[in-house]
Length: 282
Length: 135
Image (cartoon, rainbow over all chains, first blue to last red; front, side, top):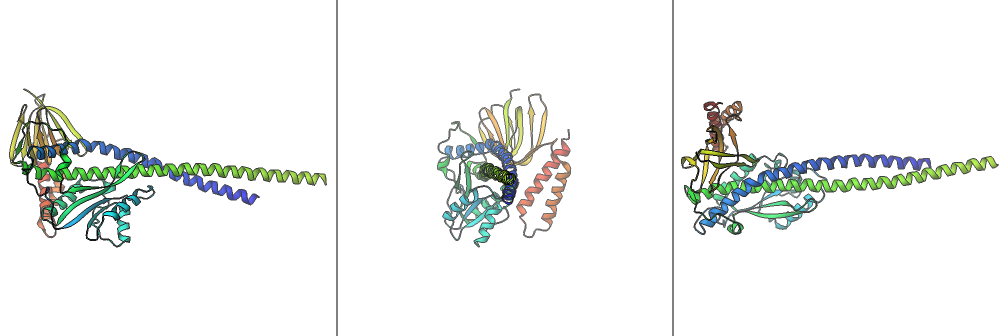
């Protein structure tokens, strides 16, 4: 009996220490989530202003502007930018991204991987990828995004790239996340059609085309950065939820074990008493 | 003098929102000055010095790392990846990055020359803004 009690006690201790870890991770994820959401809010004015201006140029010069970024290249590779996490224990976050990735990836496509979990997944499956931006999900450095866009737009203009797509995890709410595939290049003019714009004629210096060609890389930077921050938000929300569940489960388990322990203790005492009584009677 | 609203937006949020009398900046086609009631204008900004005169007639200087200006009917917006006022510029850091860029350009093998040149231009702009408009 005593043996049994001891092993239950040991289990309670181990579950308790696990609970401490999951609780701590939950708190860390909560604060990181708040940080990522702030970053998302900070970026919004930048992003929406650029989007508005691109829309304005396209709308006021309908069909007249020509830009290499608007035409689909016939030749070249398809590029995927994929955002995963660098740390584990975040529920189905990475698995869902991988599922989407496997669905759309073709053997010849090029991959820019962000997040070391995705990198090790690709390495495991012997798929080549560009690894210089793997750390981007933890640094969230806008300069690196500028570098990435610079590299991609140059290759796009040289007709080395047919299209650029990004796989990221959309943040619907604190409990729902959705892996999504978004087209980055070529830019689709219909994306901007439902926007409300000022009607007044605008002067473009030196020309609408030149402004557009400068603006689209900036637009891409803000879009990629925005999706990246959104994915990090999803990652932390997902981690928080799964850690919250783990903590709750640990609590349930402790309660259950405690009950068992008390029962064992009680029966041990009863046993002892009946032994003493039997001894006294004899 | 009539003023207009100037909003400077960076990826890190809204940098400044002020009423200004005059805005001077260099677009890719040349230096321009913007006063209130300018017609709507959209143009790219060069990596350059930028300044504005606020409603108290004080002039403020900035180094801007390229970007985009949009003059609307009501307000004017500057969209840029990075902007620093003359007070914020770290002279030592700017000099270091100038030196780094120059070193890279001296040995132009398998490096992105364009990128090094842009870095150099940004560093020189920062140094100029800091040294000529020390407040």
